[in-house]
Every structure is written in structure tokens, then in C-alpha cells.
Amino acid sequence: SLGEYEHYMLKEIYEQPESIRNAMRGRLDDQDATAVFGGLNLTPQQLRSVERIILTGCGTSWHSALVGEYLIEELARIPVSVEYASELRYRNPPIENNTLVFGITQSGETADTLAALRETKRKGHRTLAICNVVASSIAQAADGGVYLHAGPEIGVASTKAYTSQCCVLAMLALYFGRTRHMSYEAGQGFIEELRRLPAAVQQALTCDQQVRDVAKKYCDATTVLYLGRQYNFPTALEGALKLKEISYIHAEGYPAAEMKHGPIALVDKQTPSVFIVPRGTTHDKVMANMEEVKARGGPIIAVASHDDPHIDAIADDVIRVPQVPGFLQPIVTVVPLQLLSYHIALLRGCDVDKPRNLAKSVTVE
Ligand code: M6R
Image 1 (cartoon, rainbow, N blue to C red):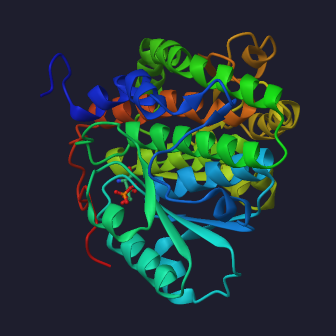
Image 2: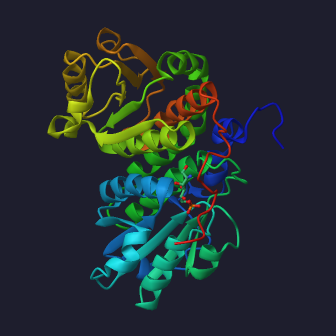
């Protein structure tokens, strides 16, 4: 039931500290400084022989696959490709031996994801599901998998399933990393950071009032740009998708540095840009991208770290989030963007839980 909340989407956004905790429950192994998964059904030999990973899904689940690519490549040094399930199915790419294919899906019923997994399984590859709905078609079709344990997600816009997917992918990166060259200490450090996540997300939720003010200011925009780099490039795509699907405002997500290769032509006084710019390796570069937008008169909304001293001088509006390591940032920085799309959609009188033209699970191709 909705309880104190007006919509399922809002309830599910607020459930995230708990849903992330549930995704981690029983899966962090302090003894061996690794993660444990009951249902992967892989022998240690099979695990070690993995030479490539394909992550596939649709929509928001495809965005979490992009986060997974950064995570697994950085922490486990296994090459990863991310594929739209609808394309993977018919593109017929050559897939090397010892490739592991993960289908990522909240519902477990998305027709394209199911078909892509079936097709790769038919060719003899090992397929696994990262899925929320227990005993769903995709969970059953795969050779094994990991459940999100996020609880039912009713709002059409995926929120808590996304952060749980990112969290499971982070734990998988730890798991694969620890079977290869990640040290015991590094594994321990990673586990500590994961344990801090629910509190960081809880703190990120306190930006709600500030986000409401930003929503009021920009709810009449016709185009919004979302820009971020590295781990926050998928966040930019996800922020843009959230805004599109529930408020019907045109939005685009880009790696921030791609701006000058075309999209910057869209910038004018009426076109706000949302920069996802927490402290980290590309922070200064993204600040430079922000200056370029500002110089062309574009309003700037920044999602930034609590202790960033320079951001107020450039951005028109700043939404502060707690600082976490780069590889966990997407789980924290997406929270204000979920809230922003929610409040803008409300102000525009949209049906946030049941946006037009969309279904919760897309069971047709
Ligand atoms: O159930 P799935 O995760 O397989 O669904 C995939 C997409 O249809 C889904 O993420 C869609 O993009 C959401 N409406 C996004 O909020």
C-alpha cells in the first residue's frame, strides 16, 4: 500500500536505503573479503575461466548495465560489452568461448531480454539473470542468477530496482575481482564502502525540498540536457530517461565532453543543463564543460558533493549529495534526479505512476 506517500514512485524512491540493504543482506563475506551469491551456479573453475562478460537489458536496466561495465572492468579487469537486448538478439555478434551473459531486468518478463538470453543460451553460452521478480520467465530461463530483493516496484518509472541493480553489479565486480587480482585489503575496503551506502542514500534523500525548488523553476522547459562523465555518464542517461518518461519533457543524456561535438548547439537561456559533478577524477574537466555551457547562457543545475567549494560560483542551482567513492557514485547521484523528474511531472499534472504510452513490463518485442 501507499502508506504516507502520494505515489508509488515517491514511495519507491524513499525505500532505497532499505532496498539497497536488502540487496546486500547475507552477501558480504568479511572473512574472505568478497561477496557471496547463492544462485550463480558456477564452479570455481568456471568462474576463473570467464574471459568476457556481456551485460544486456532494456531501458533503465540497460543503464545499470553501463554502470556494471565500468565496475567490472575497473575492479575485476574482465572485458565487458553492454548490449541492448533488442539488438543483441538479431545482431548475431561473434561471441567468444568463456563468455558469461547477464540479462538485467526488474520484471524478468521483458520480451527482448528474454529472447536475447534464450538465443545466447542456445549457442552454448552460460546465461545468468539479475532480476527482481522471483520465478519470473527470465529467472527461470537463465542458468542461474542473483535476485535484487527490492520488493515490488509498482511505479512504471524504475527507481529502486535501478539502484539495487547497480549495487548487485558492484558486489559482482568485487566477487570477480577477488577471484583474480584484487587484494584482501582492497576487498575489505570495498566492503566497508558498500556498507556505508544505505546511509549515503538516506542522506541524499534529504535534498527533496531543494529539488522541489529547482523543479518549480524549470518545469516549463521543453528540453533538458543531462551531462556526466565516467560512472556518472550512465546517471546522465538515466536522469534524462526519468524526465522523459514521466514528465514528457524532451531530455538527452551525454558524456559531458561530448557536448562540444554537437549538443551544445541546443544550449540557450531556456534550455537547462543538469551536470552530475561529484568530486573525483574528472571533476575539473566537467567544471570546464560547465563553463562552456554558462558562456552560452544556459542555466545550470549541478548535482555536487557536499564539500565542493567552487560549484556555487558557476551553477545556478546546486543539489548536494554525500561523497562516496567513484564506483558507487551512480547509486547516490541518481537519487536527486529521480526526485527532480517526480516533482516536475507532478507540477505538470502528469500521472507519475502510469505515464502515457508505457507499460510496467514490455512483454512484446
Ligand atoms: O523489467 P525490465 O527491467 O526488464 O524493464 C526494462 C525497461 O522496460 C524499463 O527499465 C523501462 O525503461 C522503465 N520504464 C524505465 O523507468
